[in-house]
Length: 322
Image 1 (cartoon, rainbow, N blue to C red):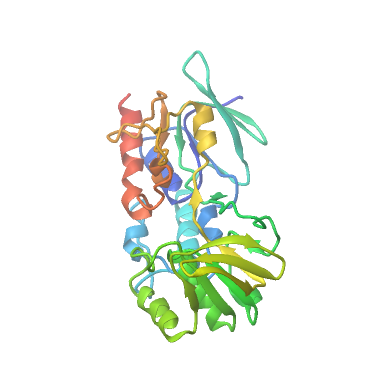
Image 2: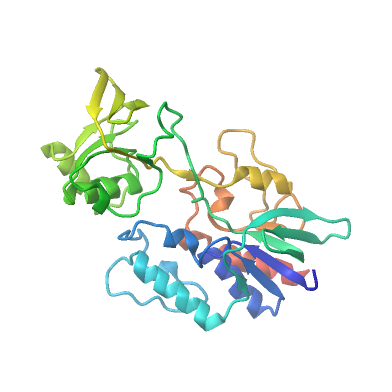
């Protein structure tokens, strides 16, 4: 532990990078620690994913995001954030996982990783929410044919595919797999497609369901997954259908246990919202800050890139003022 930092940023996504940009502006000695590739969550998005936000709403550091299409996709975003790194030349350690953060008696944080130990006066947690899938807790969920992440449709072509959920990721996967020749069935807990689905996609999937191209069971839940079939509880009773793959795209959640292990308090309800000052983003642990989606606890739809970029300014301005 030869270097003592003013700020360590855990997470090298867009908001972590935005924090680093502000730290550079204030001449703070900082380090980003990222467990995977730069903007690792975006890297793990489906290959042909299109953002809901327009390009300018994904910009950080006042660097323009040039995009020919009305909405940028995964590839354009990766190119943009790589160029951001080229421009700012961040002090960043990639493929290094933070395992523990402890505050010492002299008000310094010791950050342990799978490779090293670091000291810092302040720490920002900007780890997002894409690492831990929300499980269905049904029999057979552990089978290898069950996927909680979706990359592309090719391997599901000409197979019986069941997609769980009716949010953006589920709808995108269902449509892409159907267009590649899969026999697609959707199991949807509510009685309609989620209203937060991208406005240009929602009518597409609703029309495919209406015409029978995609079969949908509304107000239904999967009760068991077997090697060659699945069992679904519907309003009209149990249904068993042939099945080769289950895409359980039921959402993701922050690493809440990690937050609690650092000493961050969470709300007592099912939302598990971390305690922080909305004006400075500082948690109940002095010198420990939250930025980005992780601030919402289980409300992962509340924060996203375009409305949490401001966290970087709030945090670094406060640190610099001290």
